[in-house]
Image (cartoon, one colour):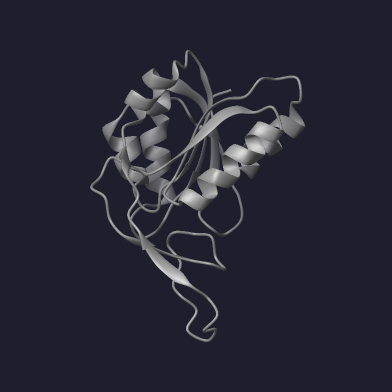
Length: 168
């Protein structure tokens, strides 16, 4: 959650970066806010899902990801169940008093389509960094939904289901 905005800041050090990060995993939200605060990135990260009902996830002490499966071979790994809140991005946007959003960073464990299909939030940002989770969501679906918002410049990063979209 936290490193992609730092990458943008590194490549464009004089350009202000503002926006919102949303992650289903509260551990990642804490890390992102810490990274961003230390590096003059004007973004806030929030824990939750968007556009769909709350559901449970397993989080373990080794893999800081809310979709991970406990490692049965290592009894030293602790796991717990979390149920992220359901966020309303438009309401959050207003509460934060944002006039401009440079980047929306999303890792919401399968609720990507709920965010992009049910809101016009993508129209408020010039860039979107998104991790999608198949089979619930796919890159062609995301590209189709973002094309309407003119977020049509894109690149895929690695084989983990992560892409970056931009209109600028």
